[in-house]
Length: 221
Image (tube, rainbow, N blue to C red; front, side):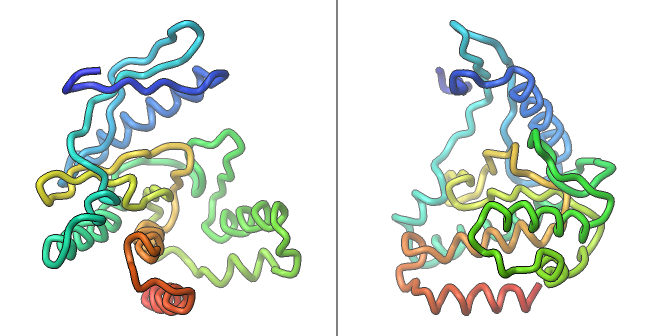
């Protein structure tokens, strides 16, 4: 659009109500993240053009961390990854108040008063849609454990493609929305670390390397 703004054009049939809910959530996140050293998206206007819903949003300068990691090396690369992991933990301090634990923006959201209740229902729904019929949802939920602290904001789609960098500094986290939950803040770091273990970011990736990394991460958590 211009140097300060972008236009987000939603797919045909998108609900104005759902888009408005996203707009409100982004405003709440931005207000609750003013203490953090990176930006989050801000919607300035919502409307419709020939039946297609659009939003005008503040442009966030820079490039994605995923692209940056493909070209940077040595100390700069290490610094970017350290900033990425630090931001994952800091996101848990975004101040968003809800009276439930669970999903914020989904129409079929699972919301509960206890962490284990949320995990159990999430596991049941996910397993019901998978071929993994021999896994017990209650046991799977119990294996995760209890919250490490008070319920916190979890992005749940935090990976290098949703992080912006400029001049070797992490400047923004984007793509908040329908998948975000109120839950255990450690999930931000666990998802972030899991996404690092891919061939594109970690050239020496193997299935065994992935299993070892995730095992150590879960033990540390």
